[in-house]
Image 1 (tube, rainbow, N blue to C red):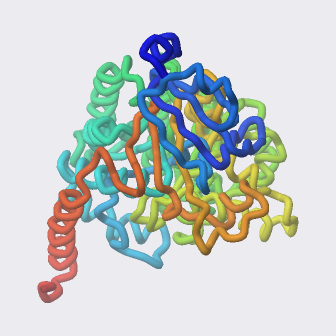
Image 2: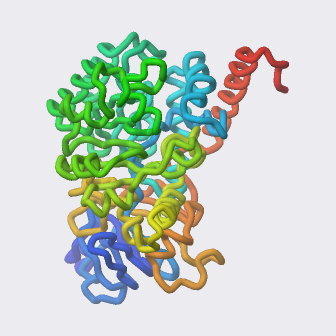
Length: 469
């Protein structure tokens, strides 16, 4: 081909040649398809043999046409990345014991900006490796998490939870809110990093604090990220105003937490309610009426014996339900493929209906539903021309995915995060051939080893045990 012919072609940044392309919405799988990407967005979808591909002059071509499935990057709608260096710190405990006897003491002793940055780097590395391209994160020092996400090249909604008490991050609600405003201003024009207004939970936030979170959500047009109805005790002890319970909400209202949130103006289309393990039919209808979103965290809820989110009932009622891993301290992985499978299987067992959450729905929960919950569904969550190229590739050429009769079914029930080989955000590669391109794995593991020793020392001092070698 002569130079004049090349000059006449439309220059684009990248063409990905795939064996399968899973669009998500519409619910279709294209075979032998190329995705044309320019300036971070998908500009065309064509058969690999289509002559119209010749009109494009790509800067690079990624040939995955033999066995790879390309799909939208997964969206982890609830994380605490800064906690990743506490993975496996305390297992097989109920929520309040896990928090009060193990997590909170370590946080009070060790959490600072570097702790959160190092934890976020570790968590993001795992997330990228297992197919996540976007996270919705809540933790101390969100500035550190935002910087980590930015450097790694992933998409993120970040926030530092507001609550009534002092912490290593600040003196109380007013300082948390001031820092949140500063963070929002810093990333207001960023193309990948956004912010949310976060309240930790009903049992740590008074009504006046919750009202300021609602105000900030409205003022900045950002999501409200909150743990809500996580346990039976939280719901029932709030309903009876049992002040002897650590999980009773901090309101003076004798009602269930969601009712109080509705009274205070938090139950809106921007509400991202995490866990929601104990709901009645009236509450499900309220969420539907208000166009609120729920984040189902099946692994974490099961591990802490918190209960079961009635995800299949919510979906049947028309409520948007996304998926999250929660922290690696309560999961203990950040693998969204595991959450997809567990969400689908759990719904079948609870409903006695094998079609309660089919594979396609589970995949939507991990992609487009997460995007909708975070208010970014016009840009990500499905493969469509005009949308941002946040994509991952899964290699189906492995024993665990052979044979394959249904691509979507295999993605949900057979694939794991270990099958992900490539990842792009805004059309830029962050994982190729299973190798991280934006993070230093050796450095991350070395920093994690340092924090492990410090955490062990905190535990030893708390229990007066003999030092661990």
